[in-house]
Amino acid sequence: MLEVGSNKQGQIILYINNQIKIKNSSFKSGHLVRIEVAPVGLSPAPREVRILYLDRSEIGWWQTKNLRFELLATVDPIPSGFPRYLRFKVYFYDSKNREVYTEQIDAKMVPPPSQLAP
Image 1 (cartoon, rainbow, N blue to C red):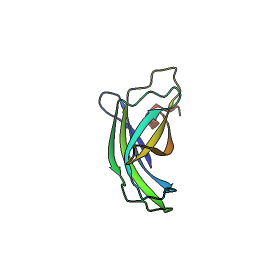
Image 2: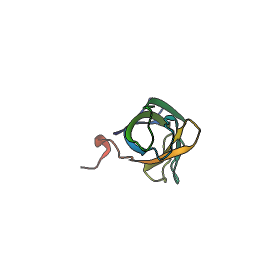
Image 3: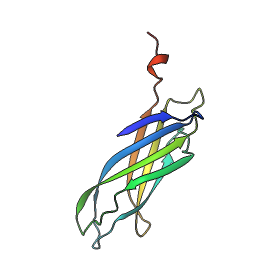
């Protein structure tokens, strides 16, 4: 689930609640420990990212699990002339600081209904 809003300063607030499917192909069990968010292309970098939830369940040898994550990303307003979408990559890291999964998030910015032409 992706929800887009804004705060009083005009910054864009993205709420992302998603699930990823990860398979552990290692001989040892492991778990996720952190997430990083980075822009793709001309999308502005998030000013702040708050991880609200990351499922850190243990994933056994050759086991596949659906793991949920939630985050809030704050982005400065998009200047006119730039594409009206935000595109980010979310990188997931295990306890040995290895990147184990990447997810792309796309958010198209549409004006509120009050600003749409009849």
